[in-house]
Amino acid sequence: MQALILAGGKGTRLRPYTAVLPKPLMPLGDASILSIILRQLKRAGATEVILAVNYLHHIIQAVLGDGGPHGLKITYSLEERELGTAGPIALAFDRLDDDFLILNGDILTTLDFAGLFAVHREGGQAATIAVHPREVPVDFGVIRTDEAGLLIDYDEKPTLRYEVSMGVNVLNKAAIAGHIEKNVRLDMPDLLMRLARAGEKVFCRREPCFWLDIGRIDDYNTANQIFDSMKKDFLPES
Image (cartoon, rainbow, N blue to C red):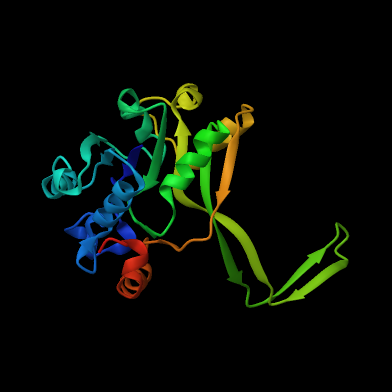
């Protein structure tokens, strides 16, 4: 299994921490976010990782090197400018396997990467999206009306339930080839919708697991607390 990790963002919502340190190298306990992901990928059977880097890339390369300490082959794909969450695929396209995992380098999860990859391969999908349930309480009464402004429904302080992308996907190289272009910005939702509109099979994989996107300072503080209390869940070998 091969993985492309998106590790080039500036992490502006985590400033001032990310003014001197790239977000994927932010510490959780005695490891960095990216190191935890790499250890999980190794345990899941990954042998090669390509890191799509940009901001403070020299620090990431200096810390991780060729991946030897993690038991992985690590190479780098440098973005000269920001290319979104799918644009970096085109830069590394020639190095990618027929099917590959692509994930954000700033997540904390217990997702079964190997299981996700196996489901994708067995189903022959163009893409497989890892999704996670979310609940958002609304602090107001939500009203629905018809076109004439007459009341249809009044729901007092409802809880909205929906599914979100975990920032972890498996893609088929041949299926996406005609939908990406080198050095052209493209985000993952746009790529996945292009595939769906083209009639390609895009599967959403639901799996009970923990997941947290570490995008803000509050999220980072939460991640530290949870990692300390659930370390064996994230890194069973530790």
